[in-house]
Length: 263
Image (cartoon, rainbow, N blue to C red; front, side, top):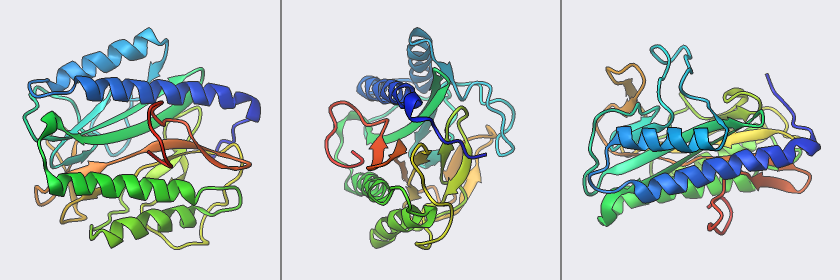
């Protein structure tokens, strides 16, 4: 299913995006050495409930997961890249943490992810990975405009990741959002320009470049959800929800203090 948002409903999408961005930035600020992943999940729950929003994750039970997710946020650490299920783990100096959050507010979903290093440790290789996903996200957003094809966005994202030397998996990627979290069209993180669905105003897309340092192969953790790199290498993940407008793409989940395309 592909939903096209009525222009009159765009303010609701902006409100959801602002909520998701604000929660993620608050959680990033609280995630320090000694923080437990279960605390991050509890903080996310409290902020979602306080805002009168609904979690897209707690009762989520897709074919690729084992049972309902049961938590309010994905917390992926180091070799975990996607769908990280919070558990009793205490963050250490230098951990690479990715937070992925999707909520529904006023009947509209927004989805976003950030990756960062815990504790201020200098990890050049990890910082380079995070930067590559952020630059790829910016490139995908810059390619998003009415009349463009999904393949144009995928090509823009993949070109940045490939140029940075990272393997690319197309097993999971970006997607449409609207009244539900995962909708068509699928947006792979690499592709051929001029192919796929034609973008039109009112379409909401979650673009999410993610990479693993030296492999494109995933495996599923024993928890039935967390996806990890097959080699144990580190990973990174960046995501924004955008709205296609007459003028291009509006980033709905951009943090208020951020500047520049896709940042």
